Length: 456
Image 1 (cartoon, rainbow, N blue to C red):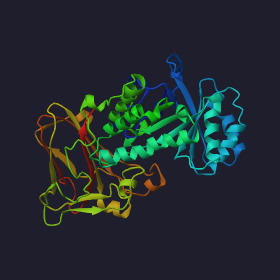
Image 2: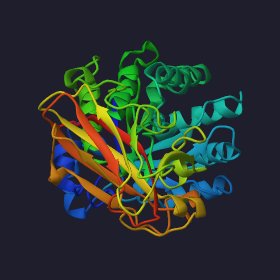
Image 3: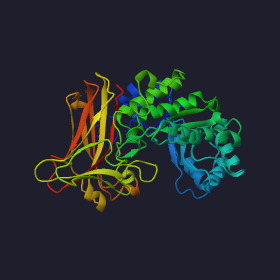
Image 4: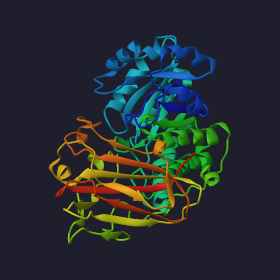
């Protein structure tokens, strides 16, 4: 099958992650892919050929005017004209929009003189007889029968494993049934492109802090490796590793090797003891108020929960989720004198194992006012003696962006992402959040408290 990745050699915008350079690709990515899309330094072009990798350029389909417009874009594409490439992806189309028919007509008119690969990104499911039959037929018969549909299966996390599986049955399994119904055998020309982006606060499918996204991504690949509907699937892979943290990046391609190269059908998570909900902490997004937390306010009313409309989507980059996800925060108001503290005992840890603790901090008044004022906030986590923190794998990222990734990420409060890696020495560790470094009167909000085992 095609084992696909976009993009190689593109660094995460959080500099606390390592460079995702060519050496990184050699070590972590090439073990699980045979097809790349994205920019690659010229000095490495020869190695692409030596490794037998396919390399694709991209044709943007935004504001497609008519069939002739598409033909013009294709004829100008380096992926269809320059010798280093094997073809292009056309990005992107939505079932049910007029652009689908414009694209169908244009792709039929394009002669593809070098017979390069043309792969088409698509969102949604076919639903219009005639139009969608023609679209799928044209895409799959492009490149003399080597065309592919790249289905965008960017799966957000849900609170429970049962909910997640029901969601995947609809979003993934039902889609391939629909594809095959409209074009018998479409599975052979379809690639399921999963999302492996989890980088808060830039762009993340990792919506539920109590869920281990490593296990959830494993669920997705395990599903297509085992469900009979995917027998003969044309390919799979990822979009978005440049907005994945280093752990998730490495895990993603180890999964792709496990299923796509080694042909395994068991869950890789079983070898590492990963589960959907590790269960070390509870109520990590304060959906249930302060339930499960031990609160020691400096004075009455200085610790509370509040709702910040769209905070999870806009300031934290939780993408494509249920409205309101990530909008409840715990607010600490700093007083003169003793600090406020909020704590919880993490349980079920394995002595000797590495874990990652993450959480988000923001200025509450900045969030209310949608004010950009990036700085290091004075709310921190203190871990009890049962944890040995690894400074070289820990950081606080201060989001200093003026412009966000999307328009809805502009003109909103910026956050701090705390990322702490520690080795458990005891099965229980108390984690205490306190505002001792805040200025008197400052109101600091936090949520997205995530604790999960680290993939070494």
